[in-house]
Length: 264
Ligand code: NAD
Image 1 (cartoon, helix red, strand yellow):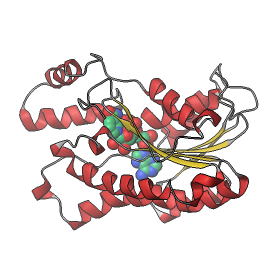
Image 2 (image 1 turned 45 degrees about the vertical axis):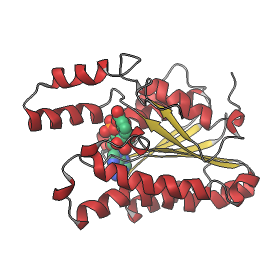
Image 3 (image 1 turned 120 degrees about the horizontal axis):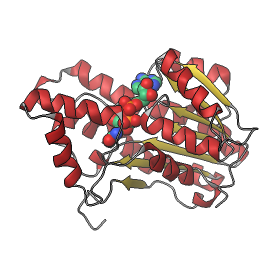
């Protein structure tokens, strides 16, 4: 299927590895020009080199990179100094740490809300007016299955991302919708990335169980009997950014191998 977005410009945040990289790769393969952002120069450059060398990248799809912390005002200014007129924005930053809610002070909450709620809102604010004027825009926020089925030790994520979800539910149904601009959230379940490995390592340190035991228990509890991979996550993201998804907005799209047990 031709997604109809070749030649568009996409900003993909948190894209040096994991789910953000998967999204950037899927978009580049559709002929989309991407600007990727991450905090570590070396890893970011490696990712950019890998995207440019991708045999499935059409020759005219550019790959730019900006090394920045997207959760800071200075980081977003550095990105928008490169360009502002993005047609596609994929918001993403590291998830907050797990823990017991009794241990989280105001600063812990402020940084979770900053990274996982206010940063996507700032990115949306900065780009939607241009998208509306041009009559096309796609925003995909990488959130979490924890928005639908909260995980006790991920309270910071449950809370901050639910705030973003409520905001998107309203904003996506505003005047944006009539101007060809959609905002959707893409909710990962368990995907095989460094983030998932870090969660198992943290749980291992807390419980004394081995990483292998914890990982196997999680994997076998998923109806698909496996973890997801960044490439299949990226393909769903690219579809949400496509011309074909123009009538989908304000949705929370779950990709979790069937782990969420509800009907809706
Ligand atoms: P990851 O740790 O593998 O990759 C995160 C990427 O974001 C890296 O490129 C990192 O450099 C970049 N990054 C982190 N903070 C940044 C910042 N402040 N500014 C710019 N770049 C930043 O993580 P992942 O597994 O790809 O997860 C992506 C998001 O999805 C996270 O918010 C995570 O909590 C969420 N999530 C992941 C899973 C999973 O199973 N992997 C499940 C649910 C939710």
